[in-house]
Length: 114
Length: 114
Image (cartoon, rainbow over all chains, first blue to last red; front, side, top):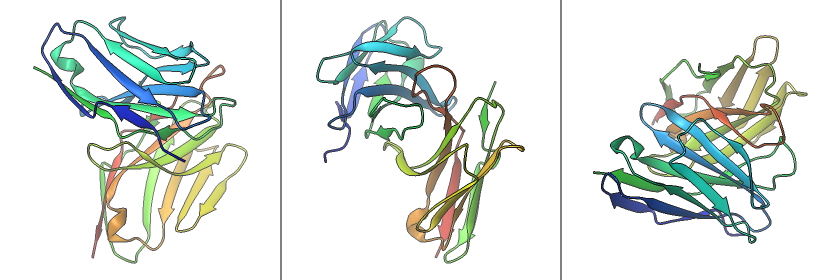
């Protein structure tokens, strides 16, 4: 079974631009969660999508948004990029049926904002 | 407020010996705990999990212990191997609602010396 895939792997943007990251979950998984990893804040939850609906959201500004498609693929968008948005963005997938499930992570997208 | 804490930023162990990584949590609503291993610029790799109804779970060289009264869990790796050198994160879920939101600790860098 193929794992979680994320594209692109690396991205360089400038302040004020917007960016869209993509995540394809493991086949059969309907829940996709997004996390941000930075040296200062560690791994922080952004949001979770299940069956095309946002099921939970972390404490991030409205510039961070996401969506999920009918095939469970998900995208996250960051508008008006700031220097502090430079981070490793990780997505994770799971079946989404119970709270006690293992989430499997993709390799991440490394975003650098200049 | 850090709900999941890993108080040891780093740990050095000799090959063949036991590695013990510790994690404390504050929220009694957490009912599922996971350990992930992570290399730089890669996504976390799932190692082992434990439900709050258990106090121990084993998988090969990895054993996780949960002490609910102390709100403490630990990961034991026996015997430790150089390939185990990585950052280890504990994570907790079950925090309200039908969601797979994970709260991560800050990580412990394990170095296994040959």
